[in-house]
Image (cartoon, rainbow over the protein chains, first blue to last red):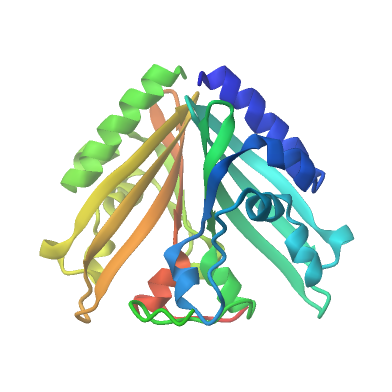
Length: 148
Length: 138
């Protein structure tokens, strides 16, 4: 893929994500797409957040999963930087919102999208993982001792 | 900046970092360069060419990892205009004799052929899991 093609599709993805539209995200994913999160999140007391099916990845990228514990109308995702280089694109996103249980969510993410023939086949999510633990969204596990 | 110039600068910076050559790194930094790490770590931004070159040269890593065990591996470089992203893996043995293995995403903002801003995004929870930093609740 050319950088221009990837840039146009990355913009289309960003618009679908901003709208929380999983149905619009789905056609941008390959059948074998995977969503990969940092290893530390798989070593805590919660199940791994990794998804390896298009529906699960689309749901994750749409952001609607967090509506279970955050007020949807308070959620803001600001795209702060976008880089595109051949068949890879990167976005840095600042996300804020209010928890239903009280308190404010504020975190920064780097997303890396790997494209193939006009679709994403791999998503790498890099949140500030320690922020999750500080906000009691996960527990600190021990390295080398997966608990999920 | 053109992609080619940014790509060339990023390649030189990566090579200097792998060599732990703070002088070579400094030559690629703007005088007012700023290095920022995730807020969760509670580390103040590092400012100025010499201070940032020292950190990028591995001086901080050597305070928690045994120097002879440190391995840096560049996984991917992505360039777009005056921005570049380098994904890398840092591994080694901590001074407390634990294994350390973490991925880092570094975003470099270039200005006139020099790095003006560095944003480092490691797996921060991994740093705490490895005993290098403590968990401080917000």
